[in-house]
Length: 197
Image (cartoon, rainbow, N blue to C red; front, top):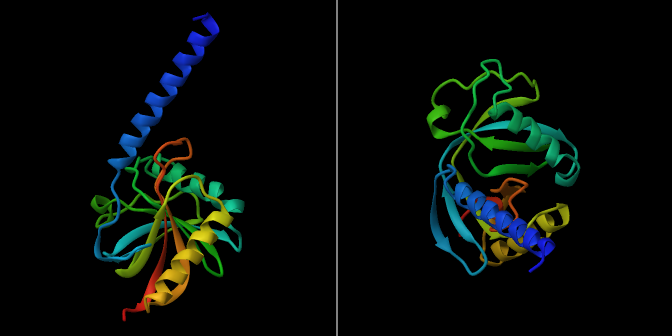
């Protein structure tokens, strides 16, 4: 085996080990509490507990246009860009919600949700306590863009309406992985329900 092939093999092995470590660390991150009430062929019916969100407004734009910018705003805050220079534990998912104005949110760790969060330096970061929600949720893998999110939301909406659910508002996208994770990516789309049949 020549030096070039050996170097390439070492790079591939290091890359795969890095991806495996990232994947394992991601699975240890705190996520919102919910109960699966029922599993359907394409989606789950879940009851989410109340949670606090750190939210940044993206304006009337799409995930592709402003998602990275919103993620940077939130990441800067949790990595210490706040008035206390305090680092906050990472949680998942990052939540994208497209309504009349799009938002990107970070779920505040439960240990912090009852106390005071550090004051943001960025004025476009606010805190919102979200009430418990009854939701239908569809999971899928890979990287996402506006087209893929819209397609999965359409699949979920069709399946949920077929089961007799009444959808409330526009959907949510839940992203669970950092951009540099290539293997074992987890995504979800969700709709809040008006009522259950």
